[in-house]
Length: 416
Image (tube, rainbow, N blue to C red; front, top):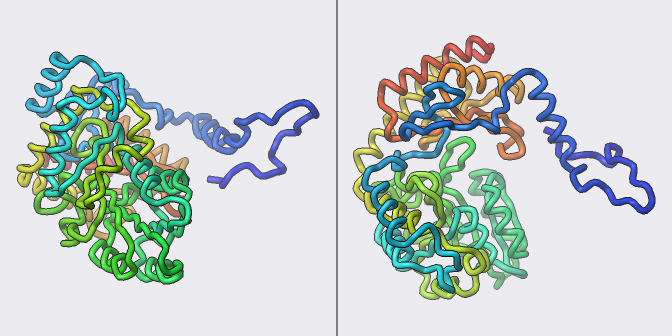
């Protein structure tokens, strides 16, 4: 996709008139209109008419297998989780109508933070209204003007926005390149505050970061380290604490950011830390202070889910088997995947271009399979992807059915 509208493309502005503020989106509008004019259903406006389970929903009147929901551990329909939400809704009402620093801290918010501290075996936990706000708030508050943030070029939008909001010097490095990261750190002036921001699993390709080596390099230069484990919490690591745990470097990470909208199965975000001064963040972090807190029913479902994930080893093992089977099956068919080996619950199928990617997406939907169509600028290297996110509740039979759907759709569209 084009980087944007060139100067020549801008409409003429007459004296006394202002430029249309939407003109900056003209290229994106054009791409979308061209795509829809080809007869393809809009892949970004799908409606789920009824959700039947963590792995199935009614889409366009058809029973559809869900392979693009980030519902990694299948907790959305867990009976205990649902019951906790119902009880909190009945006991505390629909919402708090206030910030955490005013009237918006209920017993459930404290219990949710206690569950997080227990899950990660850390001293402090802070719950935000979304995972996006967690990154926005923590990064912008910790690293400000005069500080430096060294981050992977493929970092999530919420990380980039947190960097911009804090007005720190932003120093990106090539994706998962340890040597490039160290070169950037060497150039930072001595005595400057440094925050290194990494992700455990990168959501587009499903690849993991070499965290053990990267954290060691960051500490060599005196940097603090923040790791976003949104796509690995609950699934990766012996206790589901993420890639940090799997890599054996969790004790050297200063902040772990996560979300409730993936493995936990609801909505919200969080940060856990062992830093002795961390609690001051509740008074100085603007995206925490100046927004309403999560509804009681949401934190009740989150706390219940987190505590159940502590004992989710069987689910984790089954999810790994699902990932290996899907990755292996698609590779055998001739699809180009984002990673040579399965590294997470995300399997990214690389498409030749947006048009054929959209055609493949639609062909799969007609087969009864929903996946995510991802396109630039969200994807690295201008790739178009069909992003598959597996669930621990997908049965072996469902995975085999999914493989059959991919084979038929891939041949029909000419991808394989």
